[in-house]
Image (cartoon, rainbow, N blue to C red; front, side, top):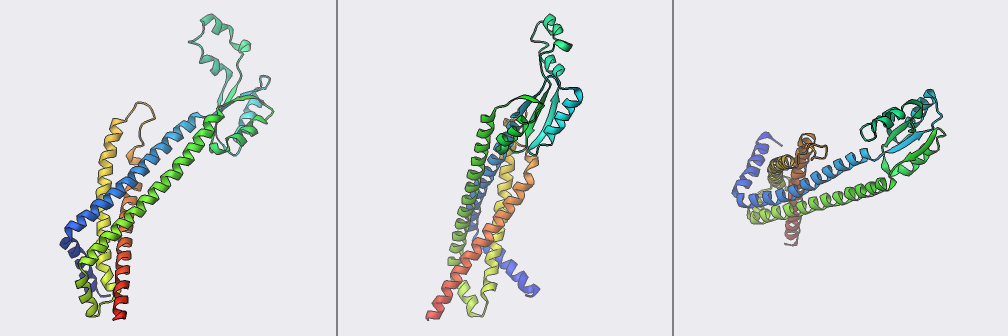
Length: 301
């Protein structure tokens, strides 16, 4: 294809947009609505996932070392815990550190009397897991270590969090998939209306020998531009709205919303790619169906 043909097709694509600007605005508005819903679902999923990760970090197993262990045996116990496959982190807390936490809540005389040999507490290891779905199996491995006296944990919370996270992932995935299909259906029908309004122009082009591919290109360019515009505008709206929500729900704790700076690139690339894909694919579907129908009609004649 020559450079002049490429320039012509590009010019035609943008000319089509301007001549059908009201329909183009409607197409962009519809696609933006679907992209915003999809983007909103993604942001909700990201924040739920982030909140679950914070809760996961608080859901740990406390392993108590046997009282008779020497310092070397206690260090060896820590190494054994870290060698377990599903263990993400092991933090050692000595019995002196544990007792120190009670210094402000018990009488000073009692606190002093519990120092040294009289300390009734045990050395402990705070163990966090990588995958809570393997909670029971990993806990069983910890309890089988001879140097472990006992464990403390909340397995019910771990099981509940794992189930909820799985449900959120499945439901979120279905929502995003359904919204993308809706967007594709809407943009395809919008381009179909545009093609129908310009059927005389297409008929003339075919009469003078234009190929189906040559006829398709301006409509595909039109769909691509519509998708890009919808993607950029959707990103701008999400950026503004999410920024305001972040300011509203900014707390002094860790449980605020995920910073947009961590996800802006995913959102931007996702919007642009989804917009272009839906626009181009929707245009291709509409044009392919129309040209096939035209070809069948011509054969019958």
